[in-house]
Length: 304
Length: 258
Image (tube, rainbow over all chains, first blue to last red; front, side, top):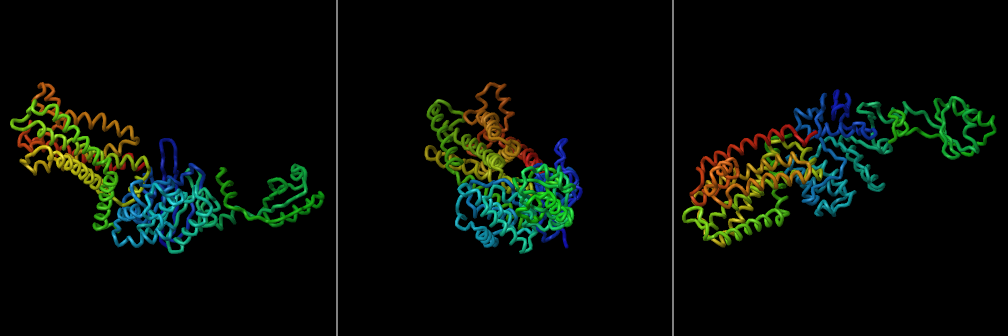
């Protein structure tokens, strides 16, 4: 399969600060790829270098095989970038803004029908003739996505697309982005919402301090880092007592719920028999899958 | 993907957007400078008409008009590119341009032509209104055209440099107040430099605005303080130097691409 995006030994320094420190990463055509990391991990710098907004200190980046510096025009034709900030041009209405954006990419009047389709699919038809200033935050966010799509790029990069968006709109945007992926677009998503990456991405890269600390399919990453957890509701007054009863198994407490990290399935038997011996009553029991958030915390040692 | 046809559409789109941008706020970008120009004309001509004759046989009011037209043309050409860029930078929407395949030459060309267009449009409006008050001869229309285009171009390029360099509105105001305004007011719009002491005549000759005003005025009356061809050479030279500087600035991504 052809590479949609390729980063080779990419570095970006600002004085002493190494914002991106030697990242090598490829994203295949048709993938739904997530780029995760805490603030300052280098996600946006990486995206900005791909978009040509920031020049790398060293290394090379290509989009659909086109070098983003040497062959920047073809590379930019291949990319639709949705910036993180809610920026807009206050002089024009939505339709005008989208037509201008398409025009910059050499798309003339014959592209107007596609612009109207994008407007309709993003549920912006009623606001197409409204000045950008008058749109709500959610509409401006959708307008930014529309702007990235007007020149029909094969690769779409969304930098925190659902930041500050309400739950309903987030669900709609997820559905729309999924649809784009099904239609054949390669999607690259940076996000703080790990549930978003877990729900959408086939593969994720986790970044910390400008380096990739994990890169795998979402499923593999969940398998690799996480056995199931056992969550018990116990009639127990003192959690300290528990650590003396059950040795060698980590747990965390949240009111009367206790979550045990299982290394192997036999651990369940050990825990239950230890609790029985100590005459601690089990009020409720469930097994819980690890989520990306836990893996993320383990790998980065940071809160999200 | 990015053939010549696409590039032409891209350039035209940006030019059209820049033209529409100032047209949408024509009250501020056209009407305001036209009114200012006409006020200068009415006040100065009221005070000095009949008392001052700079060129033989040319009433002071008529002498004043080409200078005022050119001054407004230059100031508005500068304002168009500089305000467009600083607004886009402060608002953050400059990113929409930077993400596109538009080359630095395309950016330069579109911003420059839009600047020239606004400058000439404002100048033409002042000319039309001024002709309601007085008959103005046009001796050399091609000279008028060349000075308008190269003068507007020079200031459009200067506006791009200022817009790229500045990152706050107060920095941009400093350009207008401390560079453009003094240079244009001291360029011989209201007087001939021959009326100045010799030392100030020499100082005036270091001001590129002087050549733009003097040469432009020659197109109307066939009279000037220095040779119009020398003035045109100076204006074209400045235009080439500033355009080269602007293109290099855009090519390097200075203050635009980190």
